[in-house]
Image (tube, rainbow, N blue to C red):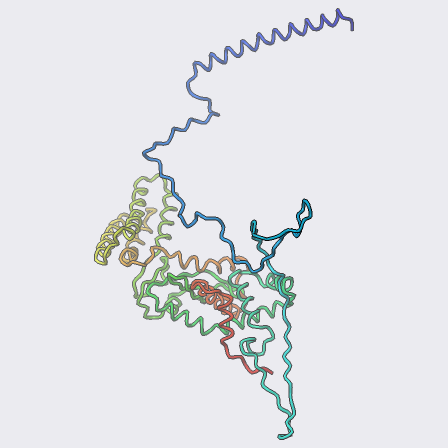
Length: 451
C-alpha cells in the first residue's frame, strides 16, 4: 500500500470514530437527563440501610473471664529435648542450658494387640499322700463363667455398641484392624448378651431408683421384634437416669408397671391416653401442645379470631414459664395461686369452640378442658419441667437405631438391647466412665467354676 492510500484509509477511519463519539455523547446526555428526573432507584439497587438507633442498640455481650486464656497445656507424659552440642557458626563447644521455648505435640501410642493368656494349672505329686494334686483355676475378675474373652473386652464391646451405636460388623472391623482380635458376629452378639445378663440386678436397681424419684418422664416409640410391631418404653428423671423396656403392647398397664402401681410423684408425659390411669400428679407436655397450635395456625393463617385464640393459649405457657424464673422465687402459696389463675384462663379458652364440632380448633379446645388441671404443674411445683423433652431425648438413640437396623430379631435380643441401653445411659448420666463402670460390674460377678 502506498503512502497516499494509507493516509486516505486513516482519514476514513477517523471520520467513522468521530461520528461514533457524537452518537455516544448524545446517548450519555439522554441518560443523564433521565437519571436527573428519576427519584426511585432501579429495582436491582439495594435500599440504603438506616443507621442503628443508639437507644435500641443491644450492648455487646462480653465474654466470660473463664474463657480469656490460651489453650491449656496437658501434663506431658514424655519430654524430649533438642539442643546443639557445638555452635553451628564456629563449631565451638557450647556450655550451659536453659529452655528457650516449648512445643506441645499430641500423639497416640500404637494400638496394643490382643493378649492371649494361657493359664497352665500344674499338678504335683505328694509322696506322703501318694497322689497328684492341683489347685482350682482362679480367674476372678478376668472372665465371666467359662468364657474365653476377658471382661475388659466385653466392656469395650458394650460401650462401642451402646454409647457409640456401632453396628456389629463395624465393631468386628475395629477389633480386627486395631487389636488383631478376630471375633465372629455371633460371638460378639453372645458377649453383649452376657453383659446384659450380668446387668440384670443393676438394671433392676435403676428401675427401683426411678420409681422413688419425685418427678418422672415417660415416653414410648415404635420398635420391631422379629418383624412384629412393638414399642420401646422409657422412664427417666431430671438427672438423665433412664430405664428402657420393650413390650408388644402400648396399653396403660405397661406404663403402670414401669412406674409402679402406687407411684406418688409427678409424671411428665405427652397427651397419650395410656398415662391417664395414673392417679398421681401430671404435667402434660407443652411442646406437643405448642407444636399442634403452630400447625393449626399455619393451616388457617387467614382466620384472625383463631390466630388470637392461639396466641392467648401460648401466652399461658409463657406467663407460667416466666413466673417460675422471677427473682425472688415465688413461695408455694404464690405458685398455687398463679397455677389456679392460669387454669381458669385455660378453661375459658377451652370453652370457646369445644362444642363446635366443625371448627378446626374443636379438638384442641377439648384437650384444654380435659387436661386443664395437668398443664400448670410446672408452675405449682419448682423442679417440674413444662415439657417431656427429657424422655424424648432419652429415647432418641433407639429411634435412630430402629430406622437403621429395623429392630431386633428375638425376645432375647430385645432384652439385651434394652438392658444395655439402661445401664450405659444411666452410667453416663451419673457422670461415670461407662467402660470402667461396666468393667467394675463384670468384675464384681462371681464367675462359674471353670473347667
